[in-house]
Length: 508
Image (cartoon, rainbow, N blue to C red; front, side, top):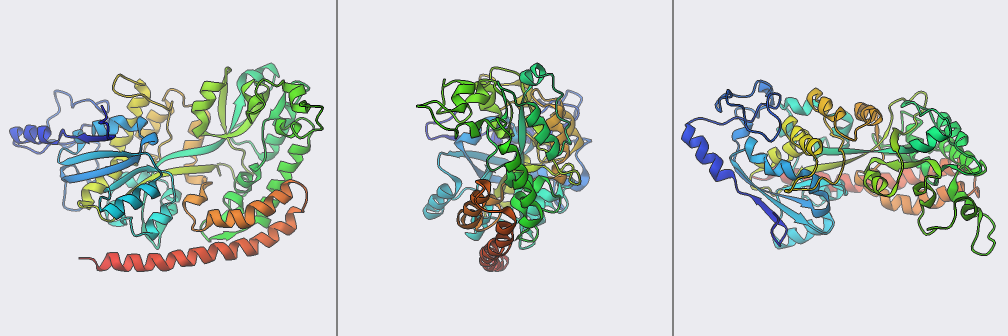
Protein backbone atom coordinates (compact mmCIF):
# COMPACT_ATOMS: atom_id res chain seq x y z
CA UNK A 1 0.00 0.00 0.00
CA UNK A 2 3.00 2.29 0.31
CA UNK A 3 4.19 4.37 -2.58
CA UNK A 4 7.80 3.94 -3.69
CA UNK A 5 8.64 7.22 -1.99
CA UNK A 6 7.32 5.70 1.27
CA UNK A 7 4.54 8.29 1.57
CA UNK A 8 1.02 7.27 2.46
CA UNK A 9 -1.83 9.73 2.03
CA UNK A 10 -5.16 9.03 3.60
CA UNK A 11 -7.55 10.51 1.07
CA UNK A 12 -10.85 9.37 2.52
CA UNK A 13 -11.69 12.91 3.55
CA UNK A 14 -13.73 13.94 0.49
CA UNK A 15 -15.85 10.79 0.52
CA UNK A 16 -16.64 11.21 4.19
CA UNK A 17 -17.43 14.88 3.76
CA UNK A 18 -19.79 14.06 0.89
CA UNK A 19 -21.54 11.46 3.01
CA UNK A 20 -21.89 13.91 5.86
CA UNK A 21 -23.30 16.54 3.53
CA UNK A 22 -25.81 14.06 2.13
CA UNK A 23 -27.05 13.41 5.66
CA UNK A 24 -27.24 17.17 6.23
CA UNK A 25 -25.89 16.61 9.74
CA UNK A 26 -22.62 16.50 11.64
CA UNK A 27 -21.02 13.10 11.99
CA UNK A 28 -19.77 11.74 15.29
CA UNK A 29 -17.03 9.28 16.20
CA UNK A 30 -18.08 5.66 16.65
CA UNK A 31 -19.07 4.68 20.16
CA UNK A 32 -15.87 3.19 21.54
CA UNK A 33 -17.80 1.05 23.96
CA UNK A 34 -20.50 -0.33 21.67
CA UNK A 35 -18.58 -0.89 18.44
CA UNK A 36 -15.22 -2.59 17.93
CA UNK A 37 -12.54 -0.04 16.98
CA UNK A 38 -12.32 0.26 13.23
CA UNK A 39 -15.90 -0.85 12.65
CA UNK A 40 -18.78 1.33 11.51
CA UNK A 41 -21.46 2.44 13.98
CA UNK A 42 -24.28 -0.03 14.40
CA UNK A 43 -27.47 0.34 12.43
CA UNK A 44 -29.24 1.83 15.45
CA UNK A 45 -26.59 4.55 15.87
CA UNK A 46 -27.52 7.89 14.36
CA UNK A 47 -24.61 9.80 12.85
CA UNK A 48 -25.71 13.10 14.37
CA UNK A 49 -25.81 11.78 17.95
CA UNK A 50 -22.55 11.94 19.94
CA UNK A 51 -21.38 8.69 21.49
CA UNK A 52 -22.49 8.26 25.09
CA UNK A 53 -18.93 7.67 26.31
CA UNK A 54 -17.48 10.80 24.68
CA UNK A 55 -17.19 13.15 27.68
CA UNK A 56 -18.54 16.64 27.09
CA UNK A 57 -15.55 18.24 28.80
CA UNK A 58 -13.15 16.51 26.42
CA UNK A 59 -14.11 18.94 23.66
CA UNK A 60 -12.00 22.06 22.98
CA UNK A 61 -13.78 25.15 24.26
CA UNK A 62 -16.63 26.12 21.94
CA UNK A 63 -15.94 23.42 19.35
CA UNK A 64 -16.62 19.81 18.53
CA UNK A 65 -13.14 18.34 18.32
CA UNK A 66 -14.21 15.78 15.73
CA UNK A 67 -15.24 18.53 13.32
CA UNK A 68 -11.87 20.29 13.34
CA UNK A 69 -10.45 20.46 9.83
CA UNK A 70 -7.21 21.05 7.96
CA UNK A 71 -4.36 19.19 6.34
CA UNK A 72 -1.80 17.55 8.63
CA UNK A 73 1.48 15.94 7.59
CA UNK A 74 2.61 13.48 10.26
CA UNK A 75 6.12 12.01 10.08
CA UNK A 76 7.41 8.82 11.68
CA UNK A 77 10.52 6.70 11.39
CA UNK A 78 9.88 3.90 8.90
CA UNK A 79 11.07 1.28 11.35
CA UNK A 80 8.53 2.32 13.97
CA UNK A 81 5.35 2.49 11.93
CA UNK A 82 4.27 -1.11 11.38
CA UNK A 83 2.07 -1.46 14.46
CA UNK A 84 0.29 1.85 13.82
CA UNK A 85 -1.40 0.91 10.56
CA UNK A 86 -5.02 0.94 11.70
CA UNK A 87 -4.59 4.28 13.43
CA UNK A 88 -4.02 6.16 10.22
CA UNK A 89 -6.25 3.85 8.16
CA UNK A 90 -9.22 4.61 10.44
CA UNK A 91 -8.33 8.14 11.52
CA UNK A 92 -10.92 9.73 9.23
CA UNK A 93 -13.67 7.62 10.80
CA UNK A 94 -13.26 9.95 13.77
CA UNK A 95 -11.98 13.12 12.09
CA UNK A 96 -13.63 13.37 8.65
CA UNK A 97 -12.44 16.95 8.07
CA UNK A 98 -8.71 16.39 8.62
CA UNK A 99 -6.68 15.31 5.60
CA UNK A 100 -3.88 13.20 7.09
CA UNK A 101 -0.70 12.48 5.19
CA UNK A 102 1.84 10.05 6.68
CA UNK A 103 5.50 10.49 5.76
CA UNK A 104 8.01 7.79 6.72
CA UNK A 105 11.71 8.61 6.98
CA UNK A 106 14.72 6.29 7.19
CA UNK A 107 17.20 8.41 9.16
CA UNK A 108 17.02 9.59 12.77
CA UNK A 109 14.55 12.32 13.67
CA UNK A 110 17.09 15.09 14.24
CA UNK A 111 18.69 14.53 10.82
CA UNK A 112 15.31 14.32 9.13
CA UNK A 113 14.02 17.52 10.70
CA UNK A 114 17.24 19.42 10.03
CA UNK A 115 16.91 18.57 6.34
CA UNK A 116 13.22 19.46 6.31
CA UNK A 117 13.82 22.76 8.10
CA UNK A 118 16.49 23.69 5.56
CA UNK A 119 14.15 22.80 2.69
CA UNK A 120 11.15 24.55 4.28
CA UNK A 121 9.13 21.32 4.27
CA UNK A 122 8.68 20.56 7.97
CA UNK A 123 5.92 18.10 8.93
CA UNK A 124 3.16 19.16 11.29
CA UNK A 125 3.46 16.24 13.74
CA UNK A 126 6.20 13.77 14.68
CA UNK A 127 4.82 10.36 15.72
CA UNK A 128 6.38 7.87 18.15
CA UNK A 129 9.75 9.52 18.57
CA UNK A 130 12.45 8.01 20.78
CA UNK A 131 15.15 10.67 20.53
CA UNK A 132 16.01 13.85 22.43
CA UNK A 133 12.92 16.00 22.87
CA UNK A 134 14.89 18.74 24.61
CA UNK A 135 17.06 19.18 21.49
CA UNK A 136 14.02 19.70 19.27
CA UNK A 137 12.69 22.25 21.75
CA UNK A 138 16.02 24.10 21.80
CA UNK A 139 15.80 24.40 18.01
CA UNK A 140 12.38 26.05 18.24
CA UNK A 141 10.71 23.12 16.46
CA UNK A 142 8.10 22.16 19.09
CA UNK A 143 4.65 23.66 19.72
CA UNK A 144 3.54 23.95 23.40
CA UNK A 145 0.34 22.00 24.02
CA UNK A 146 -1.06 23.30 27.33
CA UNK A 147 -4.00 25.15 25.80
CA UNK A 148 -5.09 22.00 23.94
CA UNK A 149 -5.06 19.57 26.88
CA UNK A 150 -6.44 21.74 29.67
CA UNK A 151 -10.10 20.78 29.12
CA UNK A 152 -9.53 17.26 27.81
CA UNK A 153 -10.94 14.54 30.07
CA UNK A 154 -8.88 11.83 28.34
CA UNK A 155 -5.70 13.71 29.27
CA UNK A 156 -6.62 13.28 32.93
CA UNK A 157 -5.91 9.55 32.61
CA UNK A 158 -2.26 10.14 31.65
CA UNK A 159 -0.02 9.65 34.73
CA UNK A 160 1.33 12.96 35.98
CA UNK A 161 4.89 11.69 36.14
CA UNK A 162 4.77 11.18 32.36
CA UNK A 163 3.49 14.64 31.55
CA UNK A 164 5.92 16.23 34.01
CA UNK A 165 8.84 14.68 32.15
CA UNK A 166 7.71 16.48 28.97
CA UNK A 167 7.18 19.83 30.70
CA UNK A 168 9.96 22.38 30.18
CA UNK A 169 9.76 25.99 31.31
CA UNK A 170 6.30 25.22 32.75
CA UNK A 171 4.93 24.23 29.33
CA UNK A 172 3.97 20.82 27.98
CA UNK A 173 5.86 20.04 24.77
CA UNK A 174 5.12 16.38 24.00
CA UNK A 175 2.57 13.61 24.59
CA UNK A 176 3.66 10.18 25.84
CA UNK A 177 2.78 7.54 23.26
CA UNK A 178 3.94 4.13 24.47
CA UNK A 179 5.86 2.78 27.43
CA UNK A 180 8.68 0.27 27.74
CA UNK A 181 10.07 -1.18 30.95
CA UNK A 182 13.35 -2.67 32.05
CA UNK A 183 12.45 -6.19 33.12
CA UNK A 184 13.94 -9.46 34.29
CA UNK A 185 13.63 -12.16 31.64
CA UNK A 186 13.07 -15.59 33.22
CA UNK A 187 13.49 -18.98 31.52
CA UNK A 188 10.32 -20.66 32.77
CA UNK A 189 11.32 -24.13 31.56
CA UNK A 190 14.58 -23.93 33.51
CA UNK A 191 12.74 -22.50 36.51
CA UNK A 192 10.55 -25.61 36.57
CA UNK A 193 13.50 -27.94 36.00
CA UNK A 194 15.25 -26.41 39.01
CA UNK A 195 12.02 -26.76 41.04
CA UNK A 196 12.06 -23.05 41.85
CA UNK A 197 9.13 -20.69 42.41
CA UNK A 198 8.69 -17.71 40.09
CA UNK A 199 9.50 -14.29 41.53
CA UNK A 200 6.83 -12.17 43.15
CA UNK A 201 6.06 -9.01 41.19
CA UNK A 202 7.11 -6.84 44.15
CA UNK A 203 10.35 -8.71 44.80
CA UNK A 204 13.30 -6.81 46.22
CA UNK A 205 16.92 -6.62 45.02
CA UNK A 206 17.80 -8.96 47.86
CA UNK A 207 15.20 -11.44 46.60
CA UNK A 208 16.75 -11.09 43.16
CA UNK A 209 20.20 -11.90 44.52
CA UNK A 210 18.95 -15.09 46.16
CA UNK A 211 16.99 -16.01 43.04
CA UNK A 212 20.17 -15.84 40.94
CA UNK A 213 22.17 -17.79 43.48
CA UNK A 214 19.57 -20.55 43.60
CA UNK A 215 19.62 -20.75 39.81
CA UNK A 216 23.39 -21.25 39.68
CA UNK A 217 24.66 -24.84 39.38
CA UNK A 218 27.48 -26.69 37.66
CA UNK A 219 25.33 -26.71 34.51
CA UNK A 220 23.46 -23.40 34.70
CA UNK A 221 24.09 -19.77 35.64
CA UNK A 222 21.69 -17.40 37.35
CA UNK A 223 22.10 -14.76 34.64
CA UNK A 224 24.08 -13.93 31.51
CA UNK A 225 25.27 -10.35 32.11
CA UNK A 226 24.95 -8.05 35.14
CA UNK A 227 27.39 -5.33 34.09
CA UNK A 228 25.74 -1.92 34.41
CA UNK A 229 22.65 -3.15 36.21
CA UNK A 230 23.62 -0.88 39.10
CA UNK A 231 22.51 2.17 37.09
CA UNK A 232 18.93 0.84 37.05
CA UNK A 233 19.00 -0.58 40.58
CA UNK A 234 20.01 2.84 41.91
CA UNK A 235 16.59 4.13 40.91
CA UNK A 236 14.59 1.01 41.70
CA UNK A 237 15.99 0.75 45.23
CA UNK A 238 15.18 4.33 46.25
CA UNK A 239 11.83 5.98 45.59
CA UNK A 240 13.37 9.46 45.90
CA UNK A 241 15.84 9.00 43.05
CA UNK A 242 15.80 7.97 39.43
CA UNK A 243 18.22 6.28 37.04
CA UNK A 244 21.82 6.30 38.34
CA UNK A 245 20.70 8.09 41.50
CA UNK A 246 19.74 11.20 39.54
CA UNK A 247 16.77 13.36 40.52
CA UNK A 248 14.93 14.46 37.39
CA UNK A 249 12.90 16.95 39.43
CA UNK A 250 16.00 18.67 40.87
CA UNK A 251 18.53 17.99 38.08
CA UNK A 252 20.87 16.69 40.75
CA UNK A 253 22.83 13.49 41.35
CA UNK A 254 22.29 11.72 44.68
CA UNK A 255 24.52 8.73 43.98
CA UNK A 256 25.73 8.50 47.57
CA UNK A 257 22.15 7.75 48.63
CA UNK A 258 21.39 4.94 46.19
CA UNK A 259 24.08 4.02 43.68
CA UNK A 260 26.62 2.98 46.33
CA UNK A 261 24.28 0.25 47.59
CA UNK A 262 23.25 -0.70 44.05
CA UNK A 263 26.77 -1.14 42.72
CA UNK A 264 27.74 -3.01 45.88
CA UNK A 265 24.92 -5.48 45.28
CA UNK A 266 25.93 -5.89 41.64
CA UNK A 267 29.54 -6.63 42.59
CA UNK A 268 28.43 -9.12 45.23
CA UNK A 269 26.35 -11.04 42.68
CA UNK A 270 29.11 -10.98 40.06
CA UNK A 271 31.59 -12.39 42.56
CA UNK A 272 29.39 -15.37 43.40
CA UNK A 273 31.06 -18.31 41.56
CA UNK A 274 29.31 -19.05 38.28
CA UNK A 275 26.30 -16.76 38.90
CA UNK A 276 27.07 -14.42 35.99
CA UNK A 277 27.86 -16.37 32.85
CA UNK A 278 29.72 -13.44 31.33
CA UNK A 279 32.31 -13.43 34.14
CA UNK A 280 33.28 -16.97 33.14
CA UNK A 281 34.57 -15.60 29.83
CA UNK A 282 37.28 -13.75 31.75
CA UNK A 283 38.72 -16.86 33.35
CA UNK A 284 42.18 -18.19 32.52
CA UNK A 285 42.31 -19.40 28.93
CA UNK A 286 43.51 -22.81 27.77
CA UNK A 287 43.95 -22.10 24.10
CA UNK A 288 40.49 -20.95 22.98
CA UNK A 289 38.76 -22.47 26.00
CA UNK A 290 37.69 -20.76 29.19
CA UNK A 291 35.21 -21.52 31.94
CA UNK A 292 32.38 -20.17 29.77
CA UNK A 293 33.02 -22.60 26.92
CA UNK A 294 33.69 -25.47 29.31
CA UNK A 295 30.31 -24.88 30.93
CA UNK A 296 28.17 -23.95 27.92
CA UNK A 297 30.11 -25.15 24.87
CA UNK A 298 31.41 -23.04 22.00
CA UNK A 299 28.56 -23.09 19.48
CA UNK A 300 28.55 -19.31 19.00
CA UNK A 301 30.72 -17.56 21.55
CA UNK A 302 30.66 -14.36 19.47
CA UNK A 303 27.05 -13.99 20.64
CA UNK A 304 27.02 -12.16 23.97
CA UNK A 305 23.89 -14.10 24.92
CA UNK A 306 24.89 -17.57 23.81
CA UNK A 307 24.18 -19.22 27.17
CA UNK A 308 20.80 -17.50 27.45
CA UNK A 309 19.73 -18.61 23.99
CA UNK A 310 20.87 -22.16 24.74
CA UNK A 311 18.55 -22.21 27.76
CA UNK A 312 21.48 -22.41 30.17
CA UNK A 313 20.79 -19.29 32.26
CA UNK A 314 17.80 -18.73 34.50
CA UNK A 315 17.33 -15.01 33.86
CA UNK A 316 18.75 -11.83 32.42
CA UNK A 317 18.10 -8.09 32.78
CA UNK A 318 16.33 -7.10 29.57
CA UNK A 319 13.64 -4.71 28.34
CA UNK A 320 10.13 -5.17 27.00
CA UNK A 321 11.55 -3.92 23.67
CA UNK A 322 13.54 -7.18 23.44
CA UNK A 323 10.43 -9.35 23.11
CA UNK A 324 10.76 -9.88 19.36
CA UNK A 325 14.30 -11.27 19.26
CA UNK A 326 13.75 -13.30 22.40
CA UNK A 327 10.66 -14.88 20.85
CA UNK A 328 12.67 -15.71 17.74
CA UNK A 329 15.91 -16.90 19.35
CA UNK A 330 14.76 -18.71 22.48
CA UNK A 331 13.27 -22.15 21.95
CA UNK A 332 11.78 -22.47 25.43
CA UNK A 333 9.06 -20.90 27.55
CA UNK A 334 10.00 -17.54 29.06
CA UNK A 335 8.34 -14.59 30.73
CA UNK A 336 9.05 -10.98 31.66
CA UNK A 337 8.94 -10.10 35.37
CA UNK A 338 8.99 -6.60 36.85
CA UNK A 339 12.38 -5.25 37.82
CA UNK A 340 13.13 -5.77 41.54
CA UNK A 341 12.20 -2.82 43.72
CA UNK A 342 13.41 -1.59 47.09
CA UNK A 343 11.32 -2.63 50.08
CA UNK A 344 10.39 1.03 50.60
CA UNK A 345 9.99 1.71 46.87
CA UNK A 346 7.48 -0.87 45.65
CA UNK A 347 6.23 -0.12 42.15
CA UNK A 348 9.18 2.21 41.48
CA UNK A 349 10.03 0.66 38.13
CA UNK A 350 12.51 1.73 35.43
CA UNK A 351 10.58 3.01 32.44
CA UNK A 352 11.31 4.28 28.91
CA UNK A 353 8.76 6.32 26.98
CA UNK A 354 8.33 7.30 23.33
CA UNK A 355 6.39 10.43 22.47
CA UNK A 356 4.59 12.35 19.75
CA UNK A 357 4.58 16.12 19.34
CA UNK A 358 3.36 19.01 17.23
CA UNK A 359 5.83 20.99 15.13
CA UNK A 360 5.93 24.73 15.82
CA UNK A 361 5.35 25.58 12.15
CA UNK A 362 2.18 23.49 11.87
CA UNK A 363 -0.22 25.18 9.45
CA UNK A 364 -3.29 23.94 11.33
CA UNK A 365 -2.17 23.59 14.97
CA UNK A 366 -5.57 22.45 16.31
CA UNK A 367 -5.82 19.72 13.70
CA UNK A 368 -2.17 18.74 14.26
CA UNK A 369 -2.83 18.38 17.99
CA UNK A 370 -5.83 16.14 17.33
CA UNK A 371 -3.59 13.85 15.27
CA UNK A 372 -1.00 13.71 18.06
CA UNK A 373 -3.74 13.17 20.65
CA UNK A 374 -5.34 10.35 18.66
CA UNK A 375 -2.02 8.52 18.32
CA UNK A 376 -1.03 8.90 21.98
CA UNK A 377 -3.46 9.04 24.89
CA UNK A 378 -6.94 9.18 23.33
CA UNK A 379 -9.38 6.43 24.19
CA UNK A 380 -10.35 5.94 20.53
CA UNK A 381 -6.80 5.71 19.26
CA UNK A 382 -5.71 3.22 21.88
CA UNK A 383 -8.72 1.00 21.26
CA UNK A 384 -7.99 1.09 17.54
CA UNK A 385 -4.42 0.03 18.20
CA UNK A 386 -5.52 -2.74 20.57
CA UNK A 387 -7.52 -4.25 17.72
CA UNK A 388 -4.35 -4.83 15.70
CA UNK A 389 -2.81 -6.83 18.52
CA UNK A 390 -6.03 -8.73 19.14
CA UNK A 391 -6.44 -9.70 15.49
CA UNK A 392 -2.80 -10.08 14.48
CA UNK A 393 -1.39 -9.34 11.04
CA UNK A 394 -3.51 -9.24 7.90
CA UNK A 395 -2.92 -8.92 4.18
CA UNK A 396 -2.87 -5.14 4.67
CA UNK A 397 -0.29 -5.02 7.47
CA UNK A 398 2.07 -7.04 9.65
CA UNK A 399 2.05 -6.66 13.42
CA UNK A 400 5.66 -6.73 14.58
CA UNK A 401 5.00 -6.82 18.32
CA UNK A 402 2.76 -9.03 20.44
CA UNK A 403 1.77 -6.09 22.62
CA UNK A 404 2.41 -2.45 23.39
CA UNK A 405 2.06 -0.68 26.73
CA UNK A 406 -0.26 2.36 26.56
CA UNK A 407 0.41 5.62 28.40
CA UNK A 408 -3.16 6.16 29.57
CA UNK A 409 -4.75 4.61 32.64
CA UNK A 410 -8.23 4.89 31.16
CA UNK A 411 -10.19 1.90 32.55
CA UNK A 412 -11.43 0.85 29.10
CA UNK A 413 -7.87 0.79 27.80
CA UNK A 414 -6.65 -1.16 30.81
CA UNK A 415 -9.42 -3.72 30.38
CA UNK A 416 -8.44 -4.33 26.77
CA UNK A 417 -4.70 -4.26 27.54
CA UNK A 418 -4.79 -6.94 30.23
CA UNK A 419 -6.56 -9.29 27.81
CA UNK A 420 -4.21 -8.79 24.86
CA UNK A 421 -2.46 -11.94 23.62
CA UNK A 422 1.04 -11.89 25.03
CA UNK A 423 0.23 -9.66 28.00
CA UNK A 424 1.04 -11.39 31.29
CA UNK A 425 0.11 -10.46 34.83
CA UNK A 426 3.65 -9.12 35.24
CA UNK A 427 3.14 -6.68 32.38
CA UNK A 428 -0.18 -5.58 33.88
CA UNK A 429 1.67 -4.91 37.16
CA UNK A 430 4.07 -2.67 35.24
CA UNK A 431 1.21 -0.87 33.48
CA UNK A 432 -0.55 -0.28 36.80
CA UNK A 433 2.64 1.20 38.27
CA UNK A 434 3.37 3.74 35.54
CA UNK A 435 2.36 6.48 37.96
CA UNK A 436 4.94 5.24 40.49
CA UNK A 437 7.79 4.56 38.08
CA UNK A 438 10.86 6.56 37.03
CA UNK A 439 12.39 7.47 33.70
CA UNK A 440 15.41 5.31 32.87
CA UNK A 441 15.91 7.03 29.50
CA UNK A 442 17.28 10.34 30.72
CA UNK A 443 19.29 10.94 27.56
CA UNK A 444 15.94 11.82 25.93
CA UNK A 445 15.02 14.37 28.56
CA UNK A 446 18.10 15.91 30.18
CA UNK A 447 20.34 18.32 28.25
CA UNK A 448 23.96 17.20 28.41
CA UNK A 449 23.19 13.74 29.78
CA UNK A 450 25.21 11.86 27.17
CA UNK A 451 28.18 14.20 27.54
CA UNK A 452 28.18 13.96 31.34
CA UNK A 453 27.86 10.18 31.15
CA UNK A 454 30.81 9.90 28.77
CA UNK A 455 33.02 12.29 30.73
CA UNK A 456 32.17 11.46 34.33
CA UNK A 457 29.71 8.66 35.03
CA UNK A 458 31.00 5.90 32.79
CA UNK A 459 34.78 6.20 33.42
CA UNK A 460 34.51 6.46 37.22
CA UNK A 461 31.60 4.02 37.42
CA UNK A 462 33.58 1.38 35.52
CA UNK A 463 36.46 1.71 37.96
CA UNK A 464 34.07 0.83 40.77
CA UNK A 465 32.54 -2.06 38.84
CA UNK A 466 36.02 -3.43 38.20
CA UNK A 467 36.94 -3.12 41.88
CA UNK A 468 39.65 -0.52 41.23
CA UNK A 469 38.01 2.23 43.29
CA UNK A 470 35.59 2.26 46.21
CA UNK A 471 32.04 3.32 45.42
CA UNK A 472 31.57 5.76 48.30
CA UNK A 473 34.43 8.05 47.31
CA UNK A 474 33.47 7.99 43.63
CA UNK A 475 29.81 8.69 44.43
CA UNK A 476 30.68 11.69 46.60
CA UNK A 477 32.85 13.10 43.80
CA UNK A 478 30.19 12.52 41.16
CA UNK A 479 27.45 14.08 43.28
CA UNK A 480 29.42 17.33 43.00
CA UNK A 481 31.13 17.23 39.61
CA UNK A 482 28.39 15.53 37.57
CA UNK A 483 25.70 17.70 39.17
CA UNK A 484 27.64 20.89 38.39
CA UNK A 485 28.15 19.78 34.79
CA UNK A 486 24.53 18.77 34.18
CA UNK A 487 23.23 22.00 35.72
CA UNK A 488 25.45 24.03 33.39
CA UNK A 489 23.86 22.26 30.42
CA UNK A 490 20.43 22.82 31.97
CA UNK A 491 21.04 26.54 32.44
CA UNK A 492 22.12 26.89 28.82
CA UNK A 493 19.00 25.07 27.71
CA UNK A 494 16.72 27.25 29.85
CA UNK A 495 18.27 30.39 28.37
CA UNK A 496 17.48 29.14 24.87
CA UNK A 497 14.02 28.04 25.96
CA UNK A 498 13.21 31.46 27.43
CA UNK A 499 14.06 33.17 24.15
CA UNK A 500 12.06 30.60 22.18
CA UNK A 501 9.00 30.99 24.41
CA UNK A 502 9.19 34.79 24.17
CA UNK A 503 9.34 34.61 20.38
CA UNK A 504 6.46 32.11 20.30
CA UNK A 505 4.29 34.28 22.53
CA UNK A 506 4.93 37.39 20.47
CA UNK A 507 4.18 35.76 17.12
CA UNK A 508 0.96 36.99 15.45
